[in-house]
Length: 98
Image (tube, rainbow, N blue to C red; front, top):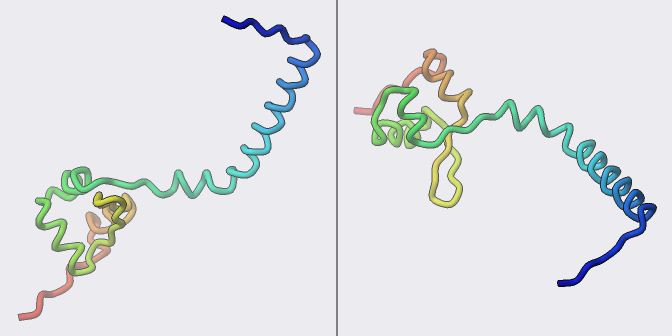
């Protein structure tokens, strides 16, 4: 086991630098925090539960363009805001072609 002794001045300087880097990172990500919080994503199961539909019906909504989705690594996600609009009826179901 190796023991390293640091001078208190060096430790304080290191602490200040880490704090400065932390503040810089906070400043860099601040504009994106609102966007991140505004966009809540639901997986397929959560969307099905909110809409009270089956997975197949949800897939039909996607195929017909009724509900947009994003796929990441074989997993499908839906925007909560889009699901809420569909629940409120603001996105009417398209008529099926006969």
